[in-house]
Image 1 (tube, rainbow, N blue to C red):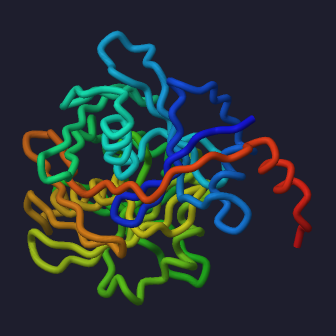
Image 2 (cartoon, rainbow, N blue to C red):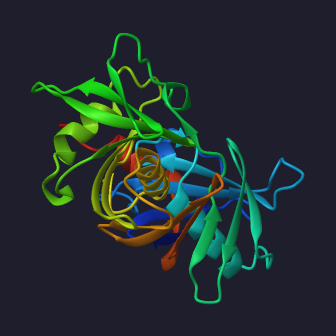
Length: 295
């Protein structure tokens, strides 16, 4: 079966985007993994699927699949690419758009400058917001936040802010994000059994009260060049800790994002770029993946 696709990125967080409105798309974990594979597929952090909505107030539904094939709740950078894709493909001229994701509705607006703003929806905090088992763990207050002490393999602990922005996030403050142990502590936190749905692990360096640097190890994808919901979670965590003020400029390795949090309304603004389009024989791609020698 041949699928038409578009490769896009938002601040370096890259996606394979599929139009499920004009072609039949039956997504499976195997197909998502094959598309996202950077050596034997197209290559992406996530696969985005645009479909007809089931919610009467939504213009479209969009679904997100991580590189490991698992479907997740939200992707802020992907949401911006979704808007650009819908407009470029002529699927809708509406601006703003309302999109249905698995946790509700979000509103998105593309400006004349080409940047896209996303109303990120409800923000939640703490163990319940991140499906975190806090039984027996120590915690400490920090401003309006509560920090949880998660033990690390080599001893000591990470002090985590727990933030739910559809996706679950665990954010810690580090002195230098460039040398932060993202490659080791990231997967330890992301897959820790206390997080029943796994978690995105954020490493945040405070530059000033309106500026941070951020790296995120995403569940099911590894470290990405940018994470939109992770940028939002970091900004919210910093504001709740009393370290930051809105708006917050978040510098990721893929570029800057602007996060505004006023009166519980959370908005993210940033770029969305189209890289190329093409077609792929999805079933042949899956077969080649299955025939790969295993290490």
